[in-house]
Length: 389
Image 1: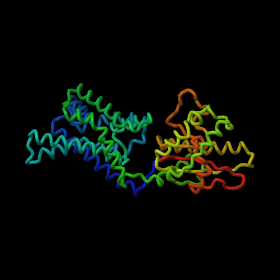
Image 2: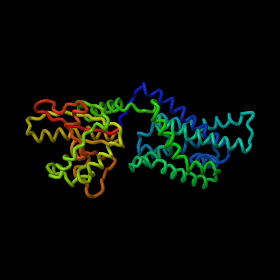
Image 3: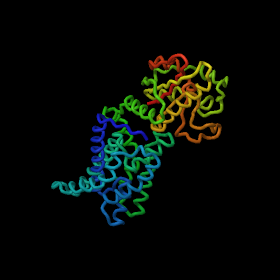
Image 4: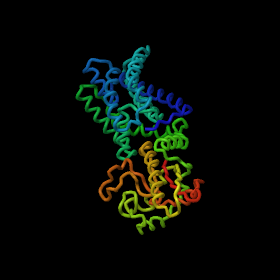
């Protein structure tokens, strides 16, 4: 995994993560005070802590370490500062806030105050979770579960429904540990995922939560280039609306000049029609394009071109490995498998790299739009790749 550290962006995100986790802890404390039932994960944790006769904070550290192993093997990129902070301090912070709440002199344990505490608890819980998730500083092992599942099945918009499922399982765990399951717990099961998704969507409008994509990709590209020893020639970011799609390219694919037609998941007809691919690509705002240049003996040096293409594919595959779910397109068919499993299911869908040409994108026009050189001198060949953002 390539780590990108940018102090300019790091400090505000650390602060955002701390604030978000503090809000989350405060929300849990209000719900614990209200006694209408806590959030599903806390419901299970409270039950286990009581069964084992230990503090809520101590048990939370233990269960988080257990779950951390699963997250590490599933997607270790989800582990960061926020992960450690949640694991070590969220539970104890909640204990502290609950202690403070009980010290408020005018607070009476009446139905009105309990309902108010529940509403505040739900808000701070969902909003705090959204803030720290969008800080991109690492996730708690539990919060990472629904996100990892949605990303692995390539259905990120299903996050809210998957979160409802994991919350329901936690409620079952709370029932088995004889924890208090109240109306607050059941409300959380139903609205937690959708509410967090709602807050995340609107938080993205604030600059602090907007990843500096071009700078980030430039740094990732630099590190990937050094990792596989394949120099990058040029790179640029353009809006996807500037891409030129040519139906003639997919028609040319039918001649099977490259020998990949109807033999690869990333080539026609399996990759979809030009309209389908255009719709998919235009769903993203920007395209980050990069090129590599390779020396050949002469314009007929097929072996030299093949070797250059293989080196370019190494770099493109490294970029895909780092970025995970971001769609990546390279030169020619997907290079992950020597022989594509088509028409059998793709063996490594999470590693799949699309083809720029098979997507109907005119590389010559792409070079002009991105102001990248298509021809880099006599006896050279240039290859293009593209990342959707």
